[in-house]
Image (tube, rainbow, N blue to C red):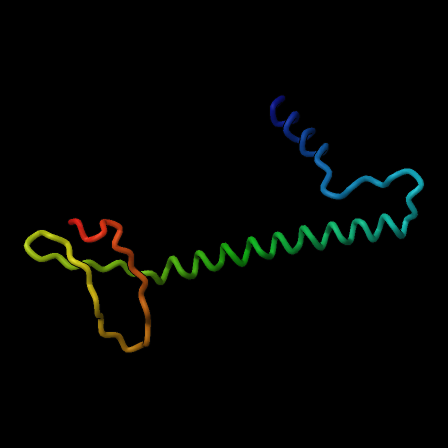
Amino acid sequence: MKKFGEYIEKLKEIRIFPEREEGQSGEEYAKQRMIAGLKYGIYVLAAFAVLRGIIVTAGSSISVSNSVNGRELPIYCVETKEPKIALTFDAAWGNG
């Protein structure tokens, strides 16, 4: 339990918003906190958008291969009901 208590104390020391400077008016400090909050909010929303994009695209990706005499060959055309495109790379530069 001692380590858990130390962890909680370290979390209490973390300051997300800047401290109020000496002589700083309440209005200036509120504006500073609002700007910092907006920045953090934008970062969080961007992270969620990227995560959602990864989850959505990872579920819909399909991997297909073609094998003739044990040698894998690329697939150049696949008939689908929906118009789709595919981007492929010949990483071996044709040496296979």
